[in-house]
Length: 346
Image (cartoon, rainbow, N blue to C red; front, side, top):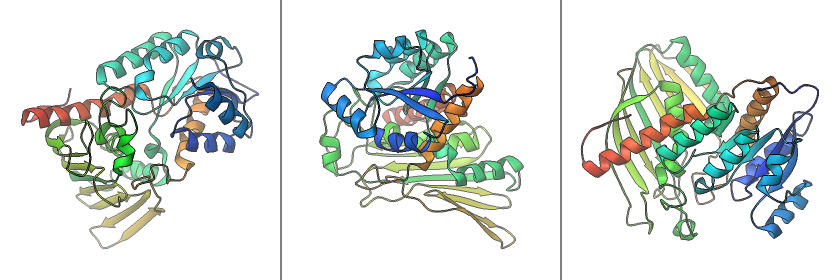
């Protein structure tokens, strides 16, 4: 990767669905010399033009035009998971750096193919796992890396979200063909990725997953698993979109010298000596009926980090390869549920 000096990183936005809202707000915040939106694209010409005009940006005529444009340094790819591989292949072959919404793809095999394409072309592939860059997440990361909590014994992750049936009535939503699955790959993936980024890989899983009577959908709206981390810590995972009215996800880490609880963007540490430390502020995370009910600050942090990495000619903090870990964990949870057996994460 070559460095970019003396000007903003020029990004094209591809895909203008529901996920584009926080990204558009973040890009406007960064239009201060750090990032410049070169153009936007959607297959629907009318929606593409309306979105471009509403934000004061230029509309691109095709993906091929973006790939051929020497003024475009990077692409922010916000398409559904089933429209990724060929787009990544096109942009990677043109030397464009890529920041992409989660998940990497619908299946781990396809996700691995995307990562291989990017690495083969020697371009950066960043993934929007914005939970990693929340201020309280970074505080928790620093705390764990310092070793102050001591040996970790137990980890509990709870994602009690809610989605009404109308959410799943949208064509493709919660299907294997478009999304690749249900609550695990579409909603809980953020919290699962954060857990892995902080605590390291999971070695084995014993799980149950399925669809509750509260939803009509192809894939799971509930999953629960017991896990064993490579570090030796035990853990539990519960994730659902059937918990009305929905609440913030909680990651609790129980260790020798205290307990750290990360909930909705805030961190509380209860030390065994009686002290309590607080970090960050509680934030909405889109766990209720409105999936977009959250602040765009974490998305801004991801785009800012990616743009800075592109400008410096280095990899971003959240790489496509690191994102494969959560795909493999989700595979293990669903595989264990299907077979009723303990499954190793591979």
